[in-house]
Length: 504
Image (cartoon, rainbow, N blue to C red; front, top):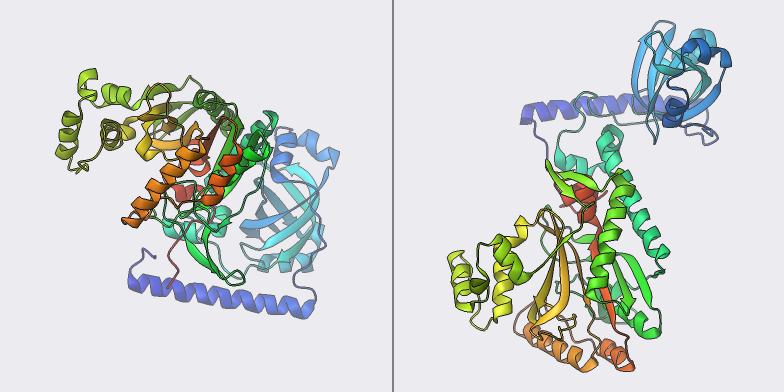
C-alpha cells in the first residue's frame, strides 16, 4: 500500500506511466532494427571475482596487462559526459563500473548507449583499468543491450521504502537491496550445510507426499482440497512425521526430509501458511541423542551461513557456539517464573497464577499441564540463549514416548532461542496400542470442536503393529533459524515470496 498522499500518489503513477510509455517506444524501435531480446551473449566474468583478483592492483600495473573481460548485468547507474559515459553494472555477485567512449565503441553505439535506461540488462566486453579516482572499471570495446526494461527502477537514493511492496515485488527488492540479497544467500548456505551435515552422519534424504488423505504429524488446522479422480478430500501436509516413521518401520534407520508444510492458521512475524522444516528420524536414538545432534547441526549451519556461531539478534548476543542449556518445564518455572521448587509442584498455586495472568485453565488439567500452561505464558519469551526444555506432559505430546520414570511426562524437548521455538523432538512412541489410544483421544477432542486435534490414522497404526524400532525424531524450523542467522525481525524477511493478501 502506498504511503504517499492521494495527489502525490496519482502524480507519481502518471509519471511512471509516461516513463513506461517512453520505454515501450524505445523497445518498438529495437524490434524494427532486428532481434530485440538477443540470447547469444556469454559473460565470462563476475564483478566480485574481478574486484577480488584485481581490486588492489595499481593502474600502472593493471592497464599494461590488457586483461580482456566480459560481464553482463543490470545497469543501475549511468552518467553521460559528451563523448564518454560511465555506468554501473550489477550482476549476481556485485557491481562494477563500465567506461564507454566514442573512441572505443564508435559514435553510433555510444549514441545508442546514451538512450539506454537504468534497469536495462547489458552485456559488455572490454579491458580492465583503474580510473583516476581509483575505481576498478572496464574500458568497453563493445556493449550490447540484452534486455529492455520497461519499468523504471525505484529512486536510487531511497530504494523501496514500503515494506509490503518489498515483499510483494521481491524481484525489485533484490535488485535494489544488497542486504536482502545477502539474506537469501545466507539462507541457501544454511540449508546446504544442513543437508550436507545430515548426509555426512548417515541420513538418507527422502521425499514424502505433500497431499495427504489424512492430515497428521502435528496439532494444526490443515488446508483442505479435493482430488477429482479419486473423488476424495485431500489435505496439504501439516508435517511429514507419520510418513517418515513408516520408513523406519520399513528398515531405513536414518531418514530426513527438508520439506514444505502448510497450516491454515494465522499470519504473524513468526508464522506463514507455508513454511520449511527439516525433520529427521534415527533408529536407536533417544531424545538426549537428538539434542546433542541438533545442537551441532545448528552450530554448523550458523558457521556456514555467517562465518560464526556467535551471533547477534535484535542487538543482543546469541551464543550458538556455547553448550545449550537443558531445563525441565518445572525447572524453567523456578529459573524464570520466580517460583520455588515446592511452588512449581503446587497445582493450586499454579492454577491461581494462570488466573491472575488472565488465563482460564480447564478444571481437568493435570499438574503437568498446568506447569506447561504457565511455562507458555511466562517463561517461553524469556529464553533468549539456546535452551532445551524437556519433560513435556503426555497430554500435549500425542506422538511422543512417555518417560519410564514418570509416565505423566514424555521424552520430548523443544529448543528455544530468542524466545522462539526453533526445534521440537522426542523419543518416538513405538507402542502401537498406546498410539491407537492417543489417536482415539485426539479424535474425541476433534469431535468436541478442537480443529487442530489429530485424526485417527489406521494405516499408521497398522505400520506400528509390524514393529518400529526404538527411535528419536526432531523437526527444525528452517525459516525461524534463518531469521536468527540473518537478524531478521519477521519471517516474511526470509521468505522470497511470503503469503500476502491479493492485490486489489
